[in-house]
Image 1 (cartoon, rainbow, N blue to C red):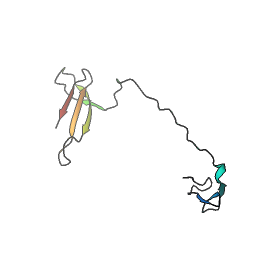
Image 2: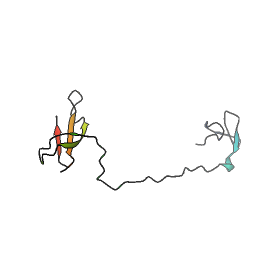
Image 3: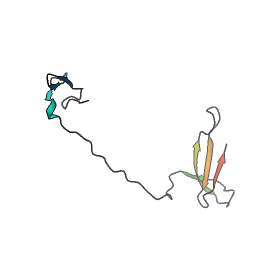
Image 4: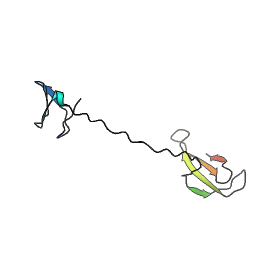
Length: 97
């Protein structure tokens, strides 16, 4: 499938040329190669970066008073979501239903 360089519509073949509804024509042998450049994506290898918000939470393992938290819907939609807490000191994860 080829698209018009002028308006972006689909080009249709007719009499050895490609025609667009806007009036643009192009010979089939003179098709431009428009390959998009693939950009590299930077990957961060450091797993110690925490992006979750912090809140006051009493850890049951080390009695530290600060934890990261997030929520997930782990059961059916009519049930409340599950809250997870990860201690900032010992990294123990606790959950509340």
